[in-house]
Image 1 (cartoon, rainbow, N blue to C red):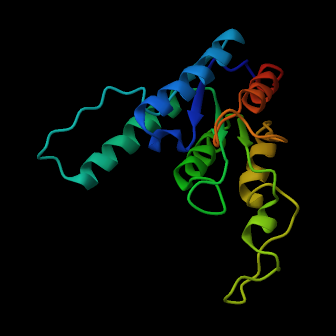
Image 2 (image 1 turned 45 degrees about the vertical axis):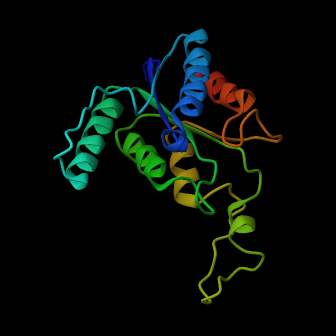
Length: 181
């Protein structure tokens, strides 16, 4: 497999205030650049919207632009820190699956060191009696299994980072693993 060059940066950062998003993405891109890679953020598009354009149409255009960005990349590093619930942002999870489906390596990180089952419940059933998977993985088995099978790895921070959703240390671990993929 040829060494990846362009790396898609997936994660919930796209929902952060602009200044916060830009600072985190700038650091990710710097770390990748220092290792010989180019980081590609989902907001690295030239999309513009008219006031008359319906929101669903805007959403579809964003999807298409991000898919084109992913198609132009060789690998993905995804922030899989739980966001708005017990698991990773669903859009980020889709992006990981999309890249894996193309045969591209996926790497991920989380700043939540608890196992998925621990975040979901202290028991093995939810309040409706539905079972909660317990495979001692950081997230749903399909996410972690897909990353592993793609040749990538999921890194778990053992300490907090400089931001609730970002750690230079754990992201650097992804970059080093990618460089050796």
